[in-house]
Amino acid sequence: MTETADHIDRLRAQWTRELPDLDTRGMEILGRARRIVLRSRPPIEAVFARHGMDAGEFDVLSTLRRSGPPWALRPTELYRSLMISSGGLTDRLNRLAKSGMITRPPSPGDGRSLLVQLTDKGRTTVEAAFREDMAVEAGMLAVLDDAERKALADLLRKLALGMETSPPADNGDG
Image 1 (cartoon, rainbow, N blue to C red):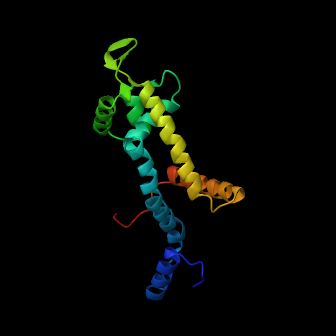
Image 2 (cartoon, helix red, strand yellow):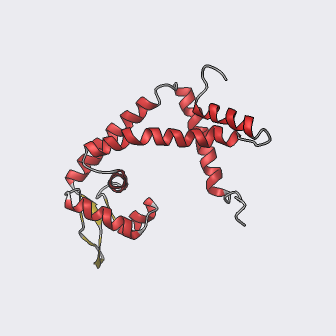
Image 3 (cartoon, rainbow, N blue to C red):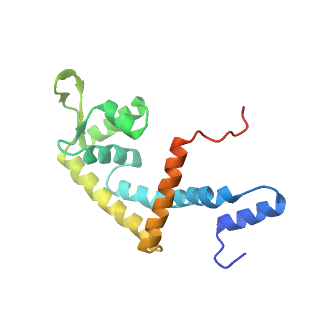
């Protein structure tokens, strides 16, 4: 084991000792990715909390902000973009409306449905939270130089696209 061995290296060494015939190379990538996500979430979620929201509420506000003026979408567009249930979205929208971050104006052309629209407060808040979040994430990545960040991003994109277009591996459940 080298001086630069991490937790995953130690796990792989243990598994290699116990099950020498098992290929644990997947753990090198996916195990590290999981640990990175678990370690990165608390400081990122703390940013959102400082701005009066949780990660789910940030997702709604940032989706609206990215949509461009007038920063309004139909609920169906939101929950499809966020990949959550309509019930999960309703709960978030109720909290965001109560906090003054969104309004629910009637949809033009269909008075029976409501849009979800950012208020000035919501736009200002999500922009500030996003800027702080990007600063926190840049700090986390400071250990990598520009070329390393680009190479890692390119490899992760390739992996993500491959996983999105390939059926999940058979896990033996039949």
